[in-house]
Image (cartoon, rainbow, N blue to C red; front, side, top):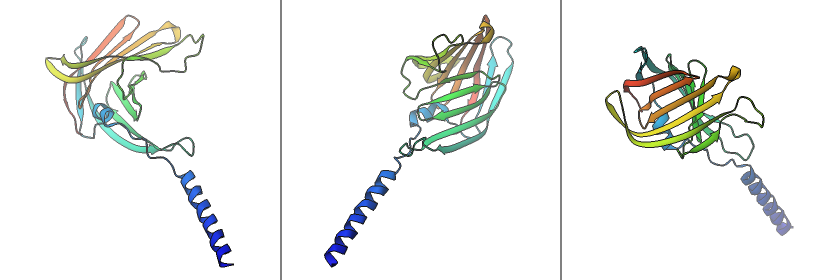
Amino acid sequence: MKQEKYFIYLIFTFIFIQFCGCNKKPEICHIPQNLKDYTIFQKGSFWIYKNETSTLTDSTFVESITPYLQSGSDKGDPDIETCTIIFNSEIISKTVIYPDGVGIVLFDGFRSPYLYSTFQPGYHDYSNNQPGNPYPSYFKNLNYFDSLVVNNKKYYNIMNTQFYQIKAYNDTVTLTYYIAKFIGLIKINKKVNAQNTTWSLIRSKTVR
């Protein structure tokens, strides 16, 4: 009888271990450090940009930064580390950083591509482009530069990416970004049809 009870106890123990193991969530999917180095900045950070056409300036400040874990969509999916940064700016509204990239939302409502953390060149669909869609959009990682001079200052480790979209009424929108490691956006070009606007960094202070 004792052997039978012991055997039954072992069976239940084995089932319990298997059940717990099957329901254990995978490790958290973190934002890669390389992507953080380009995109995540704390309060106290600021950037001052100059409009190269009108010579107006804009001061961009980090208003809030909210890191959080996004639950995996399925029971077996890992939680996802994300971070939302809200800016006080007339140029940039917010950035949302995920493990696979970052979305940049401009103040006027145009939304940039996700900038993939791999930083590999290539074209990528941004919207759910379907055959016959009259308003396609895509982005492409254009180049990686060792350095780039903006307003007589040299910046290093530059990623250049571009977003393109055909919007309603046949407006063609092209957004081009130059992003420096540990600095953030150093140059933004927005072209809507033939109208061209470029903001370039004058000075900045970033808090890591």
